[in-house]
Image (cartoon, rainbow, N blue to C red; front, top):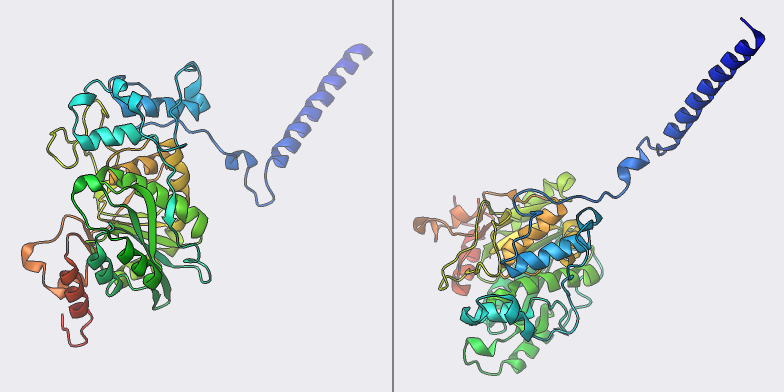
Length: 396
């Protein structure tokens, strides 16, 4: 073997060894001190899939068009090749948009509630007339009760304060409470001026949040979004959040006991009565009517809006995710949309009965001891049930 050939062979061998050592060094360098690859913890751009997030666009429905543009505006994978489509404006001065009527083919024939929603669905910023900036100062709340109410529902709120919504210490937990209100809707009836009574209630109880938007059924989604933003500013340390209506009965002790047992798996917790494979109702007279000109497609899995519980960590992420989901007129469905955007699935709990229980069990306090929530109870029923459940002589 010639000397030149030997030198070439030696050079190739040394180069191969050097490359191998360099590759090994780089591989080790990409691992964090704890042994976790840096590549694994970098943020990833996820491509929505499944039943709800469709890549194809249905041009016939306004919500689908707006969401399609929003998905592409915030996702570089989806944005490629789709530049030029207008990005929906979310936020800004909240004035009705009269031009939207030309974007919905049957706008003039729609019910007033749908027209009002469509004209203002771009609005997300409303003045907070009554705030509670110090509600969560001091000890971190274990459970924050956020109850959707209306200005005139004084009796509902007081019944909750005197029963399942009592704030303070319950066992080892700290419970705090807030009621979520919009301004009274003059279009839904003739009401007396309740400003003075509301101010008295605010000063006495310190648990009201009131925004300057019309408190209509299709604006409950807006109430959810505004509350999540408030939570991020005023109460980001809440460990869990219960959000429900002011006509539900909540077994607060049972809920706290359940949450205590889930402490190690609570980051993505969204708990309640899960509804799957639902679709929009298309009959105009139905309360949950959504026209095809507004939305086409099925609904993602969601939790019945009468009452739900989620972790404080997830609440903060839902607040951010809502910036990427166009407002939808059904509030519990909208929360399901935001969950799907985050890649989180709601969790079923058999103790949540948002569609009520059998008529024969309605007045049996022993039945309620094994439940977490039931819907549709009057203030009188709430007080009576609470007292009977806590009667020391009750035997079940």
